[in-house]
Amino acid sequence: MVKPPFDIDVLFPLALKPLTLGLLEENARLVSENGALREEIARLKGLKGKPDIKPPSTPSGMDKATEKRSRRDEKRRRGPKRPPALVEEQRIAVEGVPPGSQFKGYEPFTVQDLKIEARTLCYRRERWLTPDGVTMLAPLPAGISDHFGPELKRFILAQYHQGQTTVPRLVELLQGLGVDISKRQVVRILTASNEMFVAEARDVLRAGLAHGTWISVDDTGARHQGKNGICTQIGNDAFTFFATTFSKSRANFLGLLRAGHGDYALNRQAFAYMRCRSLAGPVIAKLATHPARHFADAAAWAAHLEALGISALKVHPDPVTIATEGALWGAVAAHGFLHDTVILSDDAGQFNVGLHALCWVHAERLVHKLDTFTETARRAKERLRSLIWWFYADLKAYRAAPDPKRKAEMKARFDRIFKRQTGFATLDRLLARLHANKAELLRVLDRPEIPLHTNGSENDIRCQVTRRKVSATTHSDDGRDCRDTFLGLSKTCRKLGVSFWDYLGARLGAVIATPVPRLSDLVAARCQA
Image 1: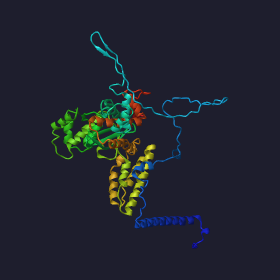
Image 2: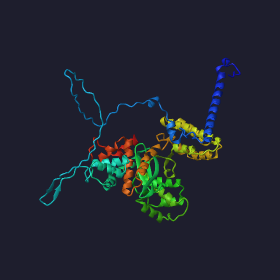
Image 3: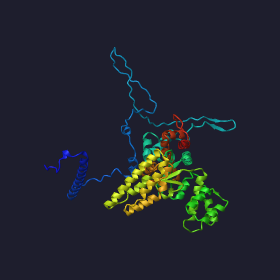
Image 4: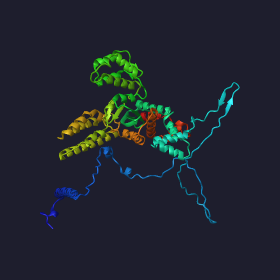
């Protein structure tokens, strides 16, 4: 054993500390070198190397990684499960009780079960012929409009949209239960005579746009009539709305924000939008001096642009596009939608309208996905990511307890992070790009009620992705509208704490325990709370 060059027993603790740290660093270096040598030996022998396991600091985990978890949440125990339905009591007697035994009451044992059976009802309706030759026929019960009852329709709609099953499997299930129904009839129930649901989904969107302080938006691919389309999601913590179109333009998004209205309006908000989008002054003057300010549909608006000679202009930016977007934005404001409402997005260009905010998870993801080829670049990237995560955690704390005194401090800190020069040229250009979005990224300082990310939108739109994988496309416009409508209503019911099963029963006329009010009223009340 080699003796140390000095007597350890006579050293003070302050002197031992640097020696201990030095030994720990040397040990870590030797462990790292040993691991590298083992991997090199395994590679030379043709063995499998160490598996590539992603670190916990993935972009999708930034929000969870900055949450403060309490020990109480980690040790949460599951309480006794109580069935929500009414309990039907059955008493079971003990056979062969000896004489002289004492009765000690009952020991409960709860069992949950389900009874699904097919029923066929024949309504014998009275028919009378009056003296004047008029035939009187007794009406059918509420909820009966064809040869399939409300409970069957509710089961089909819930299984297809909430259960995400396919039509062939649903038909096979129903026929196995004893229901005499064909695939064509199931499709008809899913797509036809659902106008009241489409109207309620539209009213839900109107309530959310009129009363919500913020909305988050996202989109994903959707197939319709064998062609690629775009499904746009609009919602917040009170509602969800889906709409599938063939366009991904800003004009398409603004058209969806009209919530079913098809008009165009020239007002103060419209002209402000046109000036913000750098529309030429003479073009704005032509539109402002003309007495016509409201147009019923796209044809009337196109005719107005043609009459003013704006459609013939061939300049950049396109006057027709900017003027149309402005008129759409004016119609949104004219109907009372998005008044001081923040639109939160992932920085897709079509969503950049009105009071706009950006998702921090998508911003950090740009840094995370940046490729590095040198150790210096890798260290600069990881150093910057740690600063962003730290700043993000403080933004979450600010949302929980807003303090006006910290606004200037947070803005200055943002500048220090995103104005720094790391020496990694690609990273520096990305930092300059993110700094240009300072107002949108720091919108939470003025509006602490808005989220810092679009995770809610991505969670909402996941059901559309699942539906796309289960059944690739829709063939009719009614089928497309019903798919978007019922998926949106299902998500809205979940956010409002309403059973989708009870909601379908209430609207279809089935027997339910308590009535379900209009979802638009519940959304308005939630947004105003």
